[in-house]
Structure formats: C-alpha cells, structure tokens
Length: 178
Image 1: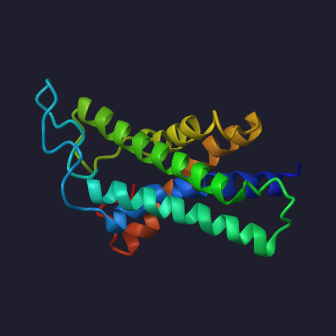
Image 2 (image 1 turned 90 degrees about the vertical axis):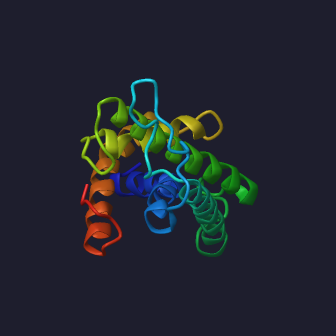
C-alpha cells in the first residue's frame, strides 16, 4: 500500500473520532460530567471542560460522520472497496470511535487534574494522544487495523490535533491554542 493510500485510509477510519473530539469545543457547555465533584485529593474529578452536552453532541456528530462516510463510499467510491463497512457497520464503528475518543479525552482531563493542572493548561502529548488511543482501543476489537495504520495514526494525530486547535483558537472557538 503506498503512503498516500495508507494516509487516506488511516484518516478515513479515524475521522469520526476527530470530529467527536472537536465538536464539544463548539457545541459543548452546560453541566460538567463530574457534577463539579472533587476527587479524594481535593481536586476536581475532570473539570468544567467536559460536559454532558459536549459529550452528547460529540458522539452524535461522530455517528453522523460515519453515516456520511457510508454514503460517500456508496456514491463516489467503489462499493466493493475496503472502505465499505455497510451502513450499520459505519454506525457501529463511528459510535465506538467517537465514544472512545471522548472517553480518552475525559481520562486525559482526569489525569491532568491529578497532576494539579487546571483546565486549559497544556499537557503535551496527553492532550493530543489519549483521545486517539482510546478511540482505537474501543473500535479495534470489532474493526481491527493493521499495525502500520495504527502507528501512522499515533504519529499524525498529535500534529492534526495541534493544527486544528490552532485554527479553533484563531476562530475564537478555544481559549488556548493547544
């Protein structure tokens, strides 16, 4: 598989996770998933940045992305291609990727609080990689990827995440660029 096809395949597969991770920045807010509670160390469990609304819309838009991917495959690509998981397959895969991504983001926030980092403080790699790792962990048992695709995603995702955060910051959708 040439590098360009590998890159396209990797991004196509993980796209619902990327979308799910980005949407709460735009449509989030409201009640935090930790209900404002503190852990036994006295610091917040997760913080105000992870909300029920953001989680709901992240998963919803992740699934919508998967549904759109299905129709793109049917309409514009070879329906016999490796990209055709079928509609139900795309719904399940995108749900797993989106849920895993948001769980990973929550876990990253939990870890940051344990290190006494406030919401918005930078934690290099933790901020950029936990959502991808957990998206892959949630989806892999049902939709496995070759190891070279996983490695590629682990390498490019921090760069894509950082780039998209810079764009969101410039558009005033985020308070910090990381």
